[in-house]
Image 1 (cartoon, rainbow, N blue to C red):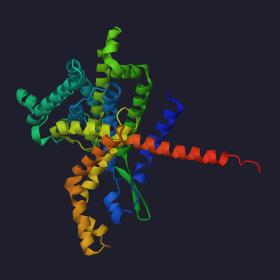
Image 2: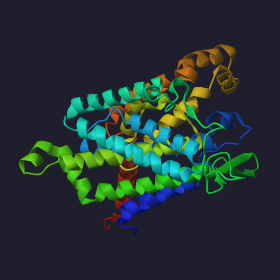
Image 3: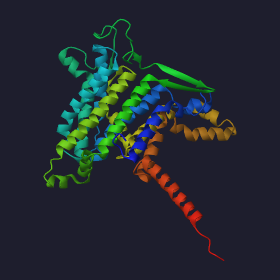
Image 4: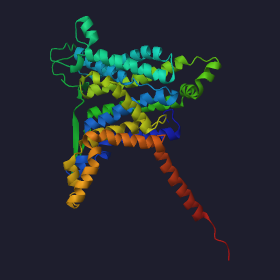
Length: 403
């Protein structure tokens, strides 16, 4: 169905179900409980980041996973998309449709120019070129160099670009929402469902972002299974041999780069729709590095891996980083004082501001023991249970010898 084989269609349905029921699945503990305060991730702002960065890394995986070309500058397209979306809010209205469309188009145009130049080289030289372009764009945005040249504001420098009351907003009418909306449906509006000690929040902005991630995931499946995707895999396998056959690989590489950049622009537009304020920090090289880590952590070249990697990192960033010593003392209050203090002392470096240390250890473990990412772990578990089931079936099917 939908042009997918049965296995891909089941995978697509699983992703759709996870997106629809995420507000419930990510709130496993009662809100007022200590576990709920520490580990529940089902609040709108974090769920939006899950799906938006999942969409971003899905696009990055089309370039890196299929072609093997590692871009260290993808955050540039994320930032460009955000700036384009905020400018639509400033010039037209808070309707997210023009903002999202322009964010994709502008990111696509930038990726055509950067890709055309960077793809003249391969390997580490390509990676360095993309990093250089991203840092140049970050510097231009941080200093608002273009705005200074034309005597106006383009990125608003280190302050960041946001919407003001005196902006033109020529399509705004009397009574129009003053927050990002989809034809009147406000992005920050939400319905809260209370069941016992649980609270499940269903927000419009999250579901709009989830729809785009689902569409992006579906498109990535079609690309992976298409002749175009097979051509990209062949380039990854041996680009030199492909060239010897007389095939010009550059158009295929540029197309993959542009598609990946447009995914990033769409993610940037959705971030602006979540919060109509953007700054140059979204284009910094550390943001590009985070995208690479997400892809490798989840599993490069897999369909679901990028989404999984993005979710793990955003969970660590937003959940583990807010755990402090007082929460740890509450967890270990049942222990003797000396053991409680020892446990807090041991765990302290890995929580709060030290969440990067936890991420680093996790990343090292994955790279060393699971080169295929967390998806490889899932495959190993599935294989283990599959073997056990086959073993049980063999035993049950064995016949007893006659006496």
